[in-house]
Length: 228
Image (spheres, rainbow, N blue to C red):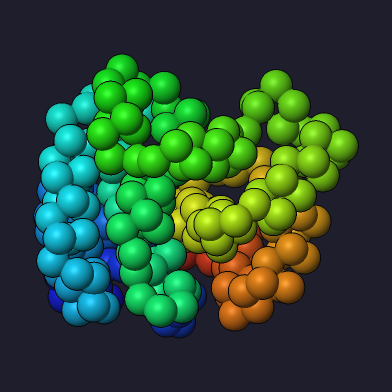
């Protein structure tokens, strides 16, 4: 597939094979380019100019932090999540939704400088949202913990469950080329999809198809062969 540009690498409910290819392509696009494309997308979706400017400043602040310690071009992930999240929000994208999506993994990445960004660009309630989204990796395979964790996300305001769904979706779209424990499939199947079905059925159904798609052995071999 010929990728037409960074904006084409944002999720938009296309054929799953196309979305997987776009995700893989995005891994090699400089996050600054994706950030500019995000601003263009938000402008087209009607975000007011003062909010666009704040998002631009937030992206600039994020760009100077060493997120590549997590993995190369890491910032492309929250940018893609923000763009996808915006598609499923009623009434057009708001500053708070996009800012939260861009910072959704702050508790997990633990990069120095995040607290200053949180203080400048987020708001008091956002701190509790970030706490709710954080996964305690020492308990991530405990069903009772997962029950509580996902119920907390589902019952929170701020569209947190939809944000979490897009976070999972963006990660799973890359799993066609990576070795991933099937445990991660079970988490989405047993906890994420049932809750999403109630609040965002199209996302739930699409994510369910992606999970099956990327764990198909023949499909994995095909995508991995194309990456060599």
